[in-house]
Structure formats: C-alpha cells, structure tokens
Image 1 (tube, one colour):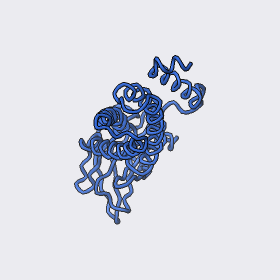
Image 2 (cartoon, one colour):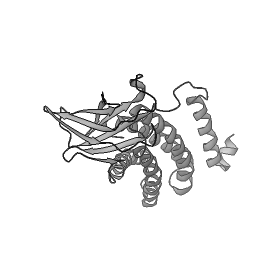
Image 3 (cartoon, one colour):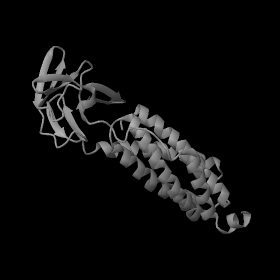
Image 4 (cartoon, one colour):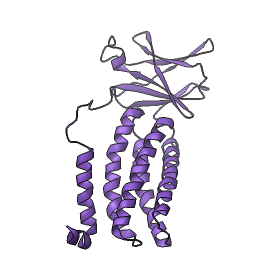
Amino acid sequence: MKRIAKKRPALFALAALVLISLALFPARASANSAEPPAILVVVLHAPNDLELFAQVNGELVPMRLSSAAWERYYKLHYFDYPGLPGDAMPTALVAASGGETKSVPMPALTSTYDNVYTLDYASMKLTRGTLPFRAALLTAMRVMLTLVLEGLVFYLFGFRAKRSWIAFFIINLVTQGALNLVLSLSAFSSGYAVLALIILEIFVFLAEIPAFLLAVREKRWWRRLLYTLAANTASLFLGGVLITYLPV
C-alpha cells in the first residue's frame, strides 16, 4: 500500500475518497424523490404585513410566507390543499396590505412544477422567473465567503508560494462558482437545497483532489490531500449556514 501511495498519489487519494464516500453516504435511503408541486412568487418592495393569495376557481387560497435575508417570497404547495382539483390553475394573484387589496392576472402555467415568478408590489408587475442579476449576485456572495474560508484553511496548512495561491483561486473559482450557480438556479426550498449541496459537494471533492494534487507542487501530496478534505468539509458546513440565512 505504501508503494502504491508513493507512486500513484492521485489514484490512492481517489480510492481513499471513494471509501470515505461509501462510509458516509449509504446507498440505501428512503425519502421524497422530488419537491411537491408548487408555485413560488418572489415579492419586491413587499410591506411587512403583506399577504398573498392565489385565485383558484374563484377561491382565494393563501400562499405561505418565507423569508431569507432581504428577500421575501410566497409559496403555494398544491399538496397543502387537497381540496383543489389537480388541474386547477391560478388565474390571478391577490395582494393584501394595510387594508388595501390589489390583484394582477397570472399567466397560464405550463406545469405544476418549477413555476417561479417575481412580483414588484409597487407597480404590481408580475414576470416569470427571477431578476437577471439575482443568481449572479447570490453566486458571487457565496463564492467570496467560501474563498475567504478555504483561503484561511489553505494558509493554515502552510501554503505560501505565489504559484500555489494562483492555483487555489483558479480551482476554487471554477468548482465553487459552478456549485453555487447551480444552487442559485435551483428550487427555493432550503431543505432540498441542503440535499443538493451535499450531493454537489461530492463532485467538488472528486474534482478538487486531483486538481490540487497536480496543480499545487508545494508541500507533500498527503498534505495537499488533507487540505482539500478539510477545506471542502468546512465549506460544506458554511454552505449549510448560508442556505439557512441567505436566499437560495
């Protein structure tokens, strides 16, 4: 085993990671396969007392309020209202605040999944999807915080060479940028986002281990391997915290 580790450090590291992954993530699991059908509306300039309703078959169905940092959004899960017909689609959104009621027509839904809208309460303008810069802003924030954390771990592991730091920034900008962009474009449910984070982080582990072993020549290979495991474990916990307190 020692001879294999000396001659093929990258192969040995990957084999070790596979064994660790099998131990930490059992193959057998029982859970929902997907998030229940839902309609989600991100509300801009929302008053604190804002209530949002979906008009379905002439009935006003309340939407559930959620918030994260500066963002407020309202969600309608069809499974929360078993009395609604399966093919019933909202025809309008009704906003109530300060004794005032406003409504805006809702475009026809293509399905009961992945229906995300943005409502500007000030102008009552409803658009499909989210603002163009939203995903980019959230991705940049998460990547920046991850770089700070993993950079601190990189420094504590003794890496000082300029070439090592250049490799560090390039590798992490690619892997963490891709991971956080996928999260920002995914569903808004924090529970499912955490599950997606864990799964995506496995691919980041698999990508960064050979990348750091090959691109960073400072220190011995086992120190580079330990850094990669420690840094990505730390960023996994950081990602879970960010999902809890920041919009997904």
